Image 1: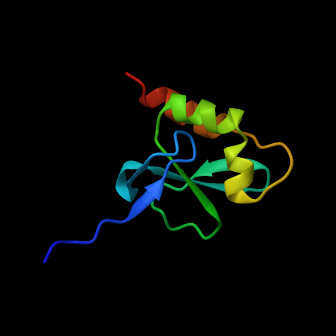
Image 2: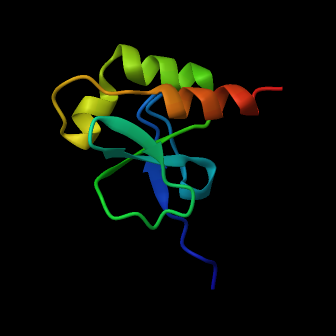
Length: 87
């Protein structure tokens, strides 16, 4: 019997892919934090680890919708980490 794949939707590009291909991001106070081990308790948003998806999610306020948060969000930590992963 084959393993059941867990699909999630990227909040940037809206593409449905396997969970392991996405990065989970949560909100702590007014700052976005990457949940590397997928164990932090909080509402989370899944996104491809790419600047293109991150920029699109910020532009469309997808983080606000997914995390049910109104107000300004600090994306600096996520932006720094995604920028360092680009070759």
